[in-house]
Every structure is written in C-alpha cells, then in structure tokens.
Length: 226
Image (cartoon, rainbow, N blue to C red; front, side, top):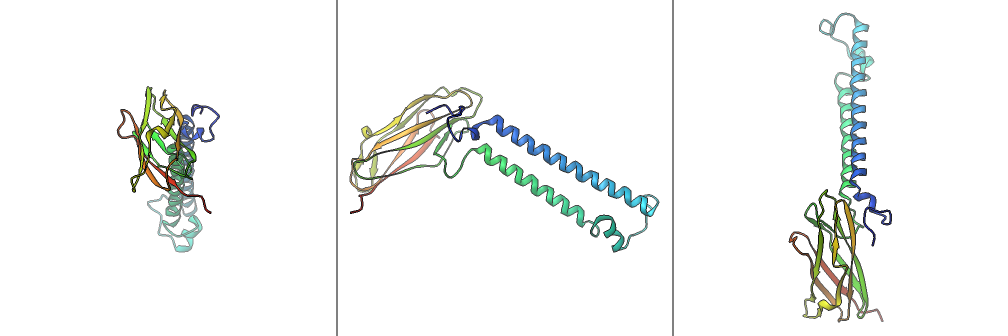
C-alpha cells in the first residue's frame, strides 16, 4: 500500500484538503459574482424606471401592471424572489458538492478510521467458502496537521451464534502498526483464513489508545453450491 498522499490510489484526491479548499473557494467566488450581477441588475432596473417615468423613486406615481411588467418582466416582487431563490439553490448545490468531496466518503469506499475527527465509518463484511483465505481493506486517515504517531490496530477471534470460532491466529492485519504523519492516509489489509464450518462470524477491530475508533467485522462462510 502507498501513502494516501501519493498518486497510486484512485481515491487519494478526495483526501486532499488543499484541493477541497480550492474547490470551496471557487464555489464561494462564483456565488459572490452571481450576487454582484444580481444587485447590478436591480440597480440598473431601478435607474431605468426613474428615467422612464421621471422624478425620484419617492415621487413616482403608482404603476399599472403593464408598466411593472415592462420594467421587471413580471409584476412587483416576483422577479426579485425568483432570482434570489435561484441564487440560494445554486449556493446550496455548490456547498453540498463541496461537503461531499471534503468528507471523502462514498458507499463504495472502504471502511475508514478517521484519526483527526475521532470517528469510524462503515463496516467490514466478507464472504468466504470453508477453507478459503479472504481479504478486505480498511482505510486509516489523518487529515489533521498534527502527527498522530504510530497507530496500532487489534482484532481477536471471530465467533458465530452457534459457538464456532475463527481463532485470533487466523485473523491478520497487514500491517498491524503504521505511522500516521500529518495529512496522510494508509490502507490496511485484513486477512482471514476461514477454516470453519458455514455460518456468520463476528468480531471487533480496535484501535489501541483510541476507544472511539472501532469497526464491526462480519465473515459469512457459505458452503459452495453442489
């Protein structure tokens, strides 16, 4: 596995805080430009109304619906509301997209232990036939500016409801201990040898020194169809 800041991982860019901040800044700038154009539009329209009917805005007589429609494209406040609602919708869509990128999570991604945020997302679910050796990936993420030091993962035996056990010796983490410098990510391989009868086996993956960082593990062992 390569460090998540490199180019070897297809999802490396979603953990790039600098890229995400540039995207958010671009969205904000676009919103400000749109707001500026909208204000200029209404100032121009108000100026045109004074030139057309004479006098100041305070001394202007009431306009008919036809006159208001000629000025604004609709009557009274309708254009203003429509424009502002459009602008708000654009802001909402932009920030939602930026938020999704910053989170760096998708339904297809690996289970993740976020060290800086102190949170864990997803679960490990693996299927195997009796006697198979299967693997899954777990992602360690440190998007913070501080060095998290060495992170050690632990996992014990997996047990089924019927009492069958996948012993701890058949459950490996490769590697079990990793260094996590600032703004880094690392993939960990979970390898299980399923030398057990068919059934569903469950356990917990722990992060030593970080009780909030844990993931449920589920191994479903199924007999091969005849």
